[in-house]
Amino acid sequence: MCGIVGYAGPRDCSEVLVSTLTNLEYRGYDSAGIAVFDEKNIIETVKSEGKLSNLKNKLETLGKPEGHIGIGHTRWATHGEPSDVNSHPHSAPRVTIVHNGIIENYQELKEFLTGKGKTFISETDTEVVAQLLDYYYDGDPITTIDKVMGEVTGSFALGIMFAEFPDRIYAVRRESPLIVGVADGESFIASDVTAILQYTKNYYLLEHDEIATLTRDSVSFVDKYLNPIEKELKVADWDREAAQKAGYPHFMIKEINEQPTAISTTVNPRIRGGLPNLDECGLTLDILKDLKSITVVACGTAMHAGMVGKYVIEDIARVPVNVDIASEFRYRNPIIGEGDLVIIISQSGETADSLAALRLSKQRGAKVLAIVNAKGSSIAREADMVIYTLAGPEIAVASTKAYITQISVMYLFAFELALAKGTVSTAECKRLTSALQKMPEAVKYVIESVDEICQYVGSKLITADSLLYIGRGLDYALSMEGSLKLKEVSYIHSESYAAGELKHGTISLIDDEMPVIAVATQSDLIEKTISNVVEVKSRGAKVILVCTDSCANKIKDGIADYKIIIPHIDELLMPITAVLPLQILAYYTSVNRGNNPDQPRNLAKSVTVE
Ligand code: AGP
Image 1 (tube, protein in one colour):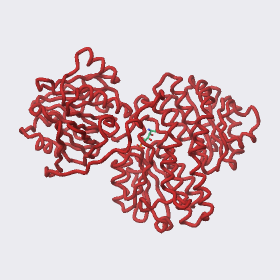
Image 2 (cartoon, protein in one colour):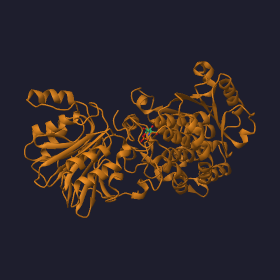
Image 3 (cartoon, rainbow, N blue to C red):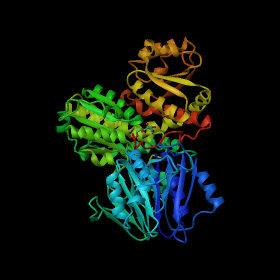
Image 4 (cartoon, rainbow, N blue to C red):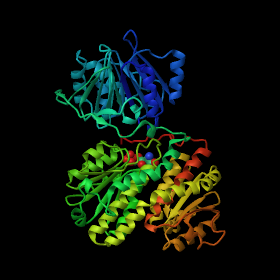
C-alpha cells in the first residue's frame, strides 16, 4: 500500500525522506518520489518507477534537493500503471502533494477541472486532488484543504506543501492512517510509526478530517470545523531494533524466529491463577456464558487464524462459530444483530474490508471484539472491546508472528469461554492454559529442528508450477495458512483442500507434476488423511508429509516422499507448532526461487483500500 512521509527540521530533508521511505518499503510499492523546498524555497521533485534504489540512483545522478522541509511517497499503483509520471509527489502550480488511498469521485472532479481549463499529465486520482487544491487556493492553506475535503469522497491520507508557505507541510486524512511525529526541533508525518522510530517515538494520531500543520518546531491541529485542538501525545512502545533485521537476511525469517517471544508476551499477561483472564477488554465470564454464537470476520491470514479459532471453540466450548471473509461479509446482508458477538482479527487494524465489517456489525447492534496488533489503529479504536496481540512490529508482508499470536488469543478466548459455559472443568482449563504457556519452548525447538529439512524440501519445490495442501479438521484450517504463505512468497500456485473433499473433483488435477503437502497431526483423523495420501501417491504425486512423531510411527515407509516430523503435543494446540514448517518451507522456497520474501510482487502489507 502507498506510504507517506514528511519532514520539517534541521536535518538533510532528502536523506530523512529516503530513510523513512525505506522503513515503509515493507508496505509494498512500485515507485517512489520526494519533493523538497530547496535553498531558494522552490519545490524540487524527484521520482522514479521501481524500487527505492532507482530513486536513490536518480538523486545521486541529478543531485539531491538540498533543503529541510519536504514530503515523500512510495506508490502502490491503483490508478494508472507504475511509471515515473504516475509516481508521487504530484504538483499543480501552487501545490505539491503525496497521497495514500483512493479518491472515489476523481473522474467527476477531473471533468469539472478540465472544464475549467486544467490539464493533467498523469492518470492518477492524486493529480486531480493537487489541481483541485490549486483551483480553490485562497491564500489560506487550511481553508483551502477544508474546501477540498468537502468535495472529495473516498478513503485517503494526504501530505501537502503549498509553494507560498515554504516553512511548513500540511497533513490530513479520512480513513487511511497517518501519524504526526515530533522530536526536539523537528516534526514528521508518516503512514505508520515504524517509519520514524529511528528519529522519535513520540507521535500524534491524526483523526478523520483533522488538519495538521507542521513546521520545524511546532505542530498544530484543527478539527473538521477548523477549531484548534489539543491532541494526546502518544509514545510508541515498539523500538527501532524491533523494526530492523538484526542480522537476519530477511524480516520474514527474523519474525518466524521471534514467535516464541511473541507468544509469551501475548499469552502470559492474560493468565491469572492458572486460568485465562480477558477482563482487560471487558469479556467477563458472565458475558461469555450467555454467548449463543460467534462470527469471526477477517481477511487472509487473519481469517485463517479465525478458522483455527472456530475448530477450537466449537470443539471445547460448544458454541457455533461462523468464519467470514470481510469483503464478502460486508456486502452479503449478513444475519447479525443485538446479542451477537463479532470478532474482527487484524494485524494492521487498518484493513479496509475488516473495518467496514466492524462498522456494519456495530450498526446492526452486534458487539465487536477486535484482536489487533497495531495499537491505536482504526479497528482497535472503533471496536467495543480490544485484545492486543503483542507480536511487535511485523514488517514482512507475509504474516507469521502476527498469525501465531492471533491463534494464541483465540485459544485463550476458547478456554475462557469453555470455562464460562461449563464445558470444561476448572482443572482441565488449567491444564490447557498451562500447555499453552509452554508453547514458546515447543515453538523454539520446532523452528530449530525443522530448518534443515524445510531447506531441503524447499529446494525440491522450486520447479513446481502448482501444489496442493491437504488436511482434516484443525490440519485443514492450518493447511489454508500454509498454502497462502507459499503462494504469496514463492509465486507457486497452491490450494488447500479438505482431504476428504479431494475425491469430489480436485483429485483429477493430481499427476506427477503436482506435489501434495499433507498435514496430519490429529491422531483420530490420521488414518483417514493417510488414505487420502495413498490416493494421491498412487496417481503420481510427490508427497510431503507434515506429521507428529507419534503419527509418523503409524505410517508405513514409502507413503511419503519427504517427512517433516514435529513432536507430539496436546493435539488441540498442534496448529501452533505445525504452522512452523509450513512458514519455513514457504520462506526457503521463496529464497530458492530468487524472490524477496519480504516484499512479494503485487502485495501490500496493509490493504487500506477495497
Ligand atoms: C498474509 O501473509 C497477508 N499479509 C494478508 O493475507 C493479511 O493477513 C491480510 O491482508 C489481513 O491483514 P490484516 O491482518 O492487517 O487485517
